[in-house]
Length: 99
Image (cartoon, rainbow, N blue to C red):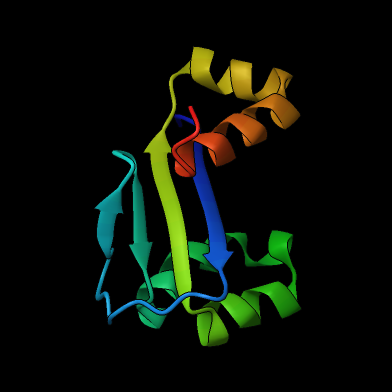
C-alpha cells in the first residue's frame, strides 16, 4: 500500500459561495470546499487523530475547508517523515502561495 498525504485546514473569517463536492481548485494542488458531506467523507478516516471538538467544528461550523490529497512516492514519504516540521511549514507556505 502506497502512503497517502492528506493535508487540510479549516479557514475562519471568510465567506464563500456554496461549493459542492470537492470544491474549487486553487494554488494548483489544493481545493476549497464548504460541502459538509464531502468534508465528513474526507476526514472520517482521521477522526480519531484530530479529536472530537476539531472534527465537529470542521464538519458543522467551519466556513471553508482547504485540502490536498495525494498518493506519495516512497521518497516523498521518507522526506516528509524525516522532516515533518519542515514539510508542514512548506505545505502551509505553498497553500498560501508563498513558495
